[in-house]
Image (tube, rainbow, N blue to C red; front, side, top):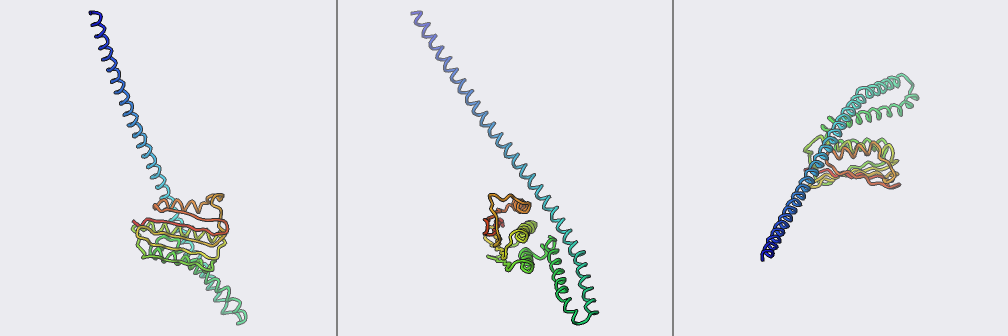
Length: 266
């Protein structure tokens, strides 16, 4: 009986010890799980903060580059207007004086040159205005694009059409107005230099929540998969990202190029 009692006590103690070990193991496991969850959350938070810092840094770099480019364009615009414009005006004036001192038969030969000088002077002045963001802001977004399209139509394209859909909405941030205009200007510049297009169009579609800008040319296009990104395309993408606009380029060989910008108005 004594041995049986001792055996029962021993068995109960072992059970209590086993239960205690199980409880301790469960607590340790729970603590490990809690620690792991907290660690993962902290790790994810640090990663998110790091990504946010990197994005903020990239945005500041892009902003600084944009401001630097704007100042450069403004200086070029001044040079075109003040120096090149004055030289062309002087050449036109000198040609007019020469025409007065020659015979009538010779005067006719001056006509084409004189007209070319006048057109060149008008083009230089128009270009100088679009390079100066202060002039663009003063003229307005839509009139500035229309001026650019008219200039390109005179210079290169058979047709350069601007289509406006919906009711125009003023920009809440006028810096964004300049950035959008520069993206459009970059697209037009690329079309002039590379596309061999004859027709070009820009559609400004004002929707309740966004402004969707679609620019197209009917040039030779290119293969998006094999064509490496040039500085022009990189500039357009970085500028679009700076103002939280969705940017897309669509093109195939012999089908022209299409650019779509979706800019949130709110």
